[in-house]
Image 1 (tube, chains in turn cyan, brown):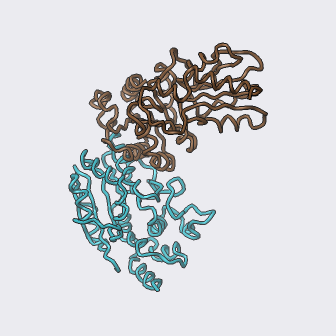
Image 2: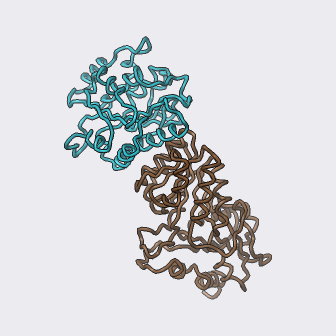
Image 3: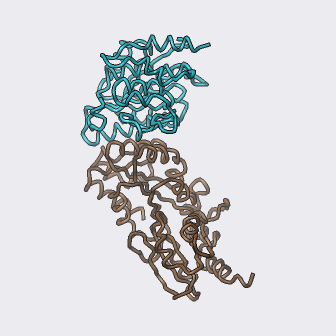
Length: 241
Length: 296
């Protein structure tokens, strides 16, 4: 059974976060004895690097116009997300119990109106990048040049054509305050021959492809944007890891 | 109506830095001067309607007030899930403005026909829907919609009545046939044909350019026992609202509008008005039949 292996992997990913609550017990609380498929956990490392080292957002700044925006487009990847939000103090750890229950604010997909720090409600694939493009444009139009918009997607999610509308347009207009992060765990049914990054770079994005478990490599990639083009980070999660 | 929309939107962009416009190529040339003046707030995403609505949702999340514009079938039908999720589910709002109502571009065929747009918007919660009946109604409706916080849909048409009727959308009695008369509610550009059809019939004619929220209080004040609904969109679009408003009263309802059947005919908008029985003689035929049940 995979339960033991999953638990071990969760523990491996449980480096304490700057003195706050370690994420592993919080993830276990969300899991509540359920089986998690590997793709639920494929986002944990990139989320940790984002919230520990990249995003300029705290529980005190969730309504600050100058905050960075993190948009979870692959809304099914909530386990690590909720655990991170609890570890960082955006939500009380008690909310992690009975996720999806009738009295709980945490569903199987996140709702921005119910959870502090959550920028978009997601679940239906292919909506986050368009919302991210609009957010980046709205910030720019208001002269808010410091915040950056980060959108987390999956490689299978890129099957949705709406993403390609956003990729082409963001590249065409040089939307420099946008970063897309694609967690590539090779789950797209028909794959991305030539590499999924080429869909972005052909449209004028900069791109970095890194090991999705390597925190330093993720940090370098997530801060590797050049300032006048949208940026892509592909976080590769090898099968079986 | 499109010209008034372009003028008013161009003015709003200059007046209020919170206003933004999102286009998918349609009408982009008409907005070129505005785009030159406000390049950060006039955004033409190309022929990408899903992105157009997603961008609108994102703009709204940062505090801007987006106006989103295209042909009705591309704005409402193609991007329906984006309207539902990128606006409503995010608790974000926008003002959607369409051209190409129902069969305005009849010669273009089914791909450019969108009689069901108001019905689709009506599946959502809290939307205001305006169906102006004259170009001069457009500026005030658009300004009010943009000034509000909620989402609104303005359905602009090439068809119109001879005269504008202002107001906020509450039912306005245009011709009063006295106590006991049937009440005909004409929505938007159907008014003139409805007046002509009933000129010598015992029918009170009221007008609205705002099918949502429908003026149910005005309806209850005006109705005796018979209601005739004439809408320039899918037949029965407002029937459920009228029925619910009158659920405590015995009443009869005749709903007239654009048929569901795909006609597979081209021609002009006026041709389609006739084929759907929405011209004066077609309306008169339906209404006299409805008012003379004894003959059945």
